Length: 136
Image (cartoon, rainbow, N blue to C red; front, side, top):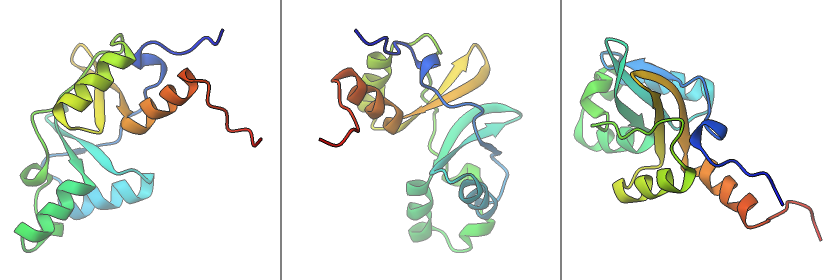
C-alpha cells in the first residue's frame, strides 16, 4: 500500500511568493514572471489579505487604464480563504471547490507557511488512484 500524503503540510509549496498591496500591478507581474507562477499572495503590513491572480489582471485590463501603475490592492481577490498545515487534503479541495478558487494559502496561526494549488491536489489524486506516468 502506498504511503500517500494526508495533510496540506505534506503537499504545500514553500516559501510563498508575496507582494505588498501598495505594489504596482506591473511589479507584481514581473515577480510572477520571474517565478513562473500565476498568482501572488498580497500582504498588508506583512499580513496576508488577498490574492492577485492572472485572471484578476485580465479583468483589470478591461476596467482600468494605466493598469501597470495601479496598486495591487485595487485588483486583488479578497477576503483570503486559508487553511492550516493540518487540514486534510480532501477537506481543502472541498473548500477550494466551494469558494471557486484554485489556490489556498496555508497559515500556521498568523504565519503564512505555504500554498497549495489545484494542480497540487490533482497530482495527489492521481497518486491516490494509482496513476503511473510509465508508458505501457
